[in-house]
Length: 359
Image 1 (spheres, rainbow, N blue to C red):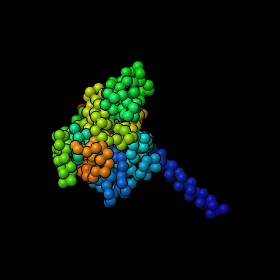
Image 2 (tube, rainbow, N blue to C red; image 1 turned 180 degrees about the horizontal axis):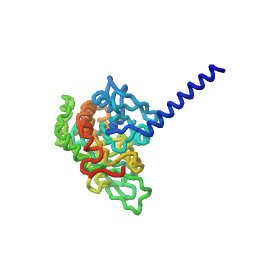
Image 3 (tube, rainbow, N blue to C red; image 1 turned 135 degrees about the horizontal axis):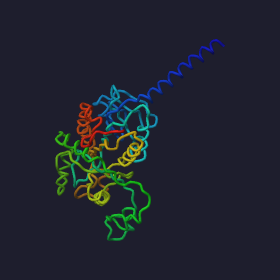
Image 4 (cartoon, rainbow, N blue to C red; image 1 turned 120 degrees about the vertical axis):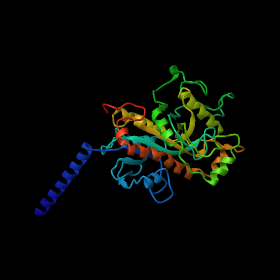
């Protein structure tokens, strides 16, 4: 009985200690300055074949591993947890869920954090070359109506049209629309401009294999350029689509849904979900959507090259992966380091905005 009482006392002390620690974390959460958002990792976080996460973990010294049972894998953080890294998982649903779980985590104060999404993508060869890096001002989703193109009217360019429209490449009629789910998310344009001008001269990785492929893109001057930094927008879809016709659709789609302000440059499978989660977290005063930066780097083209069919690309050598992963870090890391080095300036005032109050 005495041993049981002693054990009970020890367990009670441990329970009170855990509870106190949990309450303390909730009352005094860590103020996070930057969240690095990636969408996939191939194997381990360090030391093997890299995915989007690995270079950030290794080079930004995200050495601390933080349990994250609601996510795809553990979080990573630097020594003082001012920078944390997260892998959302691919496609819109997992990405949205992961960011929502992170935003509600009582361990962190994310109200002043900058969110940097750094991921690889397919690039429109009309806009840029493999290895190029684009800062977005718009994220657009592909919520749509669709008809198999074999059943579409012969004068349609493709079988995809906006909800509320009667044919492709047509602005939807509000009277024919249903639901109020957002399709286009406008990002903070001044912040995107700031990041672009900070990084536009960044030396980017190129390889002989990429250069050889680039040379075959006759008639596409931007696809033949050395990798460069630009501004351009993303189209998010759960489908890994490809081809000249669908690239034409993507160009039209972003133009329509951004009221002629946006330009399709990069594909993605996560950005709308992340944007939706951050929009809701902003309304809950758990995050600031105005501090969301989206950087996509080109690992492949969104369509087939000259003289090839769309299906040919399925077996083409995937030569842009490593340059895209490398350049995501090269272009994104100066932004992270600028924010950390001048936190007194950027904590309460984002570039282009007056100091924030009441958040």
